[in-house]
Amino acid sequence: MEDTRSVASLMDSTSSKIQQLQKAFAELESQRAVTLNLKWKELEEHFHGLERSLKRRFHELEDQEKEYETKTRKAQELLEIKKAAVEAKEKASLERLQKKRDAAMFTINSALDKYNNAPISKPSVGERWPQNAVGDSSNAFAADSITDDNPDGTVQDVQISPVMGNFEVKAYPQLLKLCGDMDSAGLHKFVSDNRKNLASLKEEIPMAFRAAANPASLVLDSLEGFYPMEAPTADGKKDANLLGMRRTCIMLMECLSILLSGLDPNSLAAVLSQNVKRRAKSIAEGWNPLLQSLDMDACNGNSLEAHAFLQLLASFAIVGDFKEDELLKLIPMVSRRRQAAELCRSLGLAEKMPGVIEVLVNSGKQIDAVNLAFAFELTEQFSPVSLLKSYLTEARRSSTQGRPGNASPAVQDEFNERELTGLKTVIKCIEEHNLEEQYPAEPLHKRILQLEKAKADKKRATEPTKPQPKRPRGAQPRVPDNNNNNIKTGYGRVIPERYPQYVYDNRPFLSGPIMAAQAPPPPPQTYTFSPAPAHGNFYGNCYQYQAPPPPAYFH
Image 1 (cartoon, rainbow, N blue to C red):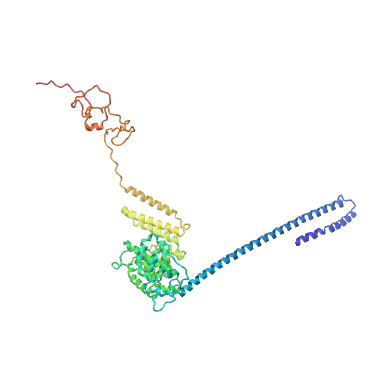
Image 2 (image 1 turned 90 degrees about the vertical axis):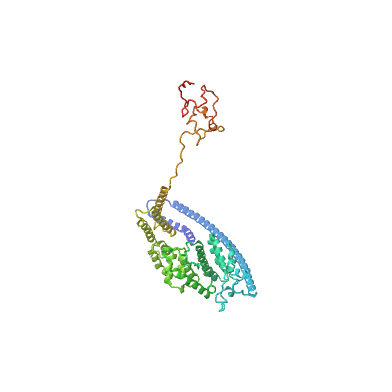
């Protein structure tokens, strides 16, 4: 608006400026001797035209400014209306939410009053809580009433809070009954029968443990038979049943750890009572001497015995009862297992991992070292690319040095298969940790193709050749097909175009019962010669010849 006022004031002063200019022009004209061609009237009309043009433009700008102000005012009014509508919707939503919240609180308070006022009878030892009490609590192990008379932390002396919400085992409701009955043998059998759905089982078993009177004792009961009494040092790799049972034991201990991770300190102390820990320590002390006979190279980083021992210490929080050096010696025996990194964290060995990785590198387990280096963020100290190249170099060196020139084909195949396995392992590790830019896998793929091609060629060369069927020698009799005019080929049939009909097919000595079945019927025409009924004048090849006349018969 200030600019508009200044323009208006300048336009108002135009007349005074023109008058001043007229006086100056008159004075100039009086002082000049020569009359100017440009007259004052022309100048005056010019300046007045400019004044009118400026005023017209000024009025147009004023109109545009008023129009803009009108549009702005309407837009602001529209925004205010929309804002009011949004606020009204928010207010209505808040009112609905408040009503729902009040209704939910009323329902919860009613349930609490009903629960607090109802008489509760504690079940005896070995029994479980009713299903409604267990099902109404996700914190079924609160230790509000742990006393000296209940040192084992059984659930019958634990208050169950119904405020934590409901839990439900959807896919396998049988788990609730097995856990509620503390049936460890039935639980083992159920897991073994449903091993194909192990992922869903592992999700629901921690929830089903809540129905058990004492889930920690249930898991300890399931460990019975991990080492058979008749053969405690038996090789689990050769016994499929023992192998499956040990894997189930490890999974149940892992599920117990998942359950315990979601409990508060009081509930955790209720489940892992001192009696439970003493029992777990007793089992671990019985297993520990049996681990001394394990060979790290033979285990190949996949020992179920060592994994079960370490998982037992981690799940029942008894790590402090064993020496750290003994635990560190067992880590290379489980380094290839998927749970190795998380198991080391649960055991509190994260700070000792550089030494463990060094042991793995020195023992030729560079792949496991790379996985642990990524898990504990030690890739700067242990370069993954260098470790992978070292692993591949050792695999190729063992393949070439251990293969003498006169080695048997079976030994050569074994070394080639070892190198092929190493290449595939390195490629898988590169893909898992996204190392393609640092270590391209294209040369490794080419080497795999070469080894597989050589393997396939050698297999084809050693395969025995199949004998070809013998073809019948000599001309075979032609068997015509009177019912079908199509030309057929095969054994016992001759193509007429290649083998024309023999001219002596109608000779009479082929009229026997056997030959008559094979010989074609004689043509309707007759012949001029008539052979003798005896053998006649024929060679062995059925050609006729001219015989001399017989001698005179003497009486």
